[in-house]
Amino acid sequence: MKIRRAELKDTDQISQLFYDTVTNINIKDYDSAQISVWASGYNDIKKWSSKIQEQYFFVAEQDNKITGFGSITSEGYLDYMYVHKDHQGKGIASELLKYLVQIAFDHDLREIRAEVSITARPFFRSKGFEITKTFITRLGEVEFEDCEMTKFLCKK
Image (tube, rainbow, N blue to C red; front, side, top):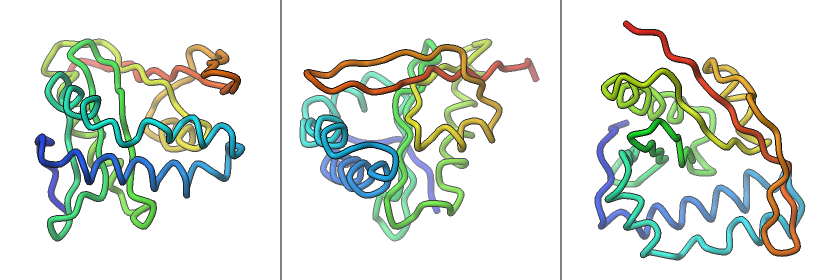
């Protein structure tokens, strides 16, 4: 597995991975209306391009195929962490998270925050994140039970 910075040419693979993961993995914790709304913007290449350019956006790659991606802002907001539906449980998210945590250290941040899905909460808990806030997000007529999780960083 290789971790590298995402490039604009990756947007098609990133968007498809996002869609496939949400519709195949997150379906166990969310109903069909929630999945439909969540996955609806997956092919917005303009959005993906701007995220790649504006954030520290990394991809995990194996045999020239993207198997996961994650991103963080310079303020410590972990925006994305997705692993391909066929590559779950292989340590890909853990490796991506190491890169994102290093970015936070490089920016002298004291914490990393993320809005975390029900599906991803066990992973983030296992990496030292704590639930710091719970709330309901409404997208159109669909509600999501969301939580903010925070990892407090210690100086090295």
